[in-house]
Image 1 (cartoon, rainbow, N blue to C red):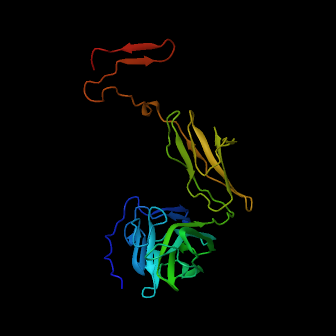
Image 2: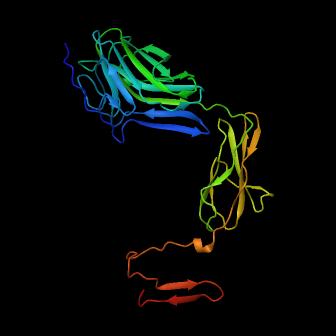
Image 3: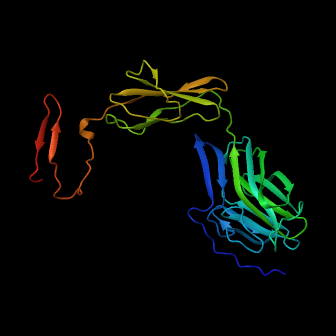
Length: 326
């Protein structure tokens, strides 16, 4: 009979768990998520928790027969008296568009005492999704293969309903006494195709007015979403005659200018060839009084520092020297 080990303190390291990329545009999103559980050392780590079975944990620490797939892994020992375990996220992984999504991960089943490969078909792994973290839908289920190395499972395809996305991976004992080890969970949603009409909204700039030669970034207030969008930024001296800006083919564009210029972005959906143009914006020039350089200090910027040379450019440059004091 096993002696249960008290759970380790909850550890949520800054580098622990996941990189979760939630891409939000105009109230929609696309799920793109990966975690390798690096930095975890407790049964609950960040948004993930491992429960059920015997000695559930998400950890790098080796145990009786257990070693992680990589730096750290989720694990639990399942056998006849503790036949099920569950790995799940307690906070949404992102907001699904309701389009085709894939999940993959790595796993192994190794004997509790020896760490040797568990026989094939000793347990079943069930992968599920949910919009609320309570009611789950099955993505797939399969019996384990026999290996001491972690094997790739998936990618498995599913189409969740639009909204928050939760994932649950369950282990179900059939025979034997083994660790179920899980790691490298990767979830990727395919964007829905774009469709017209397209309404890019207003052209926006991170600065306006701007200093001559200073960089600023242009964007759209309501950028269209979906797969198959092409972008072309244009400029105009008067807001009427427009020219394509070479290489400016992303949703945002960083540039600089020496004279006041108008900007707009033409967005094209290749799925139906619909187009939309952002409302033009004139980026004006700031007064020279607002545009100055920040000097490089040799000894600091406190009392006693002084400007010892000023060059006035023009017809016949003049140099003013002041080397005797502030």
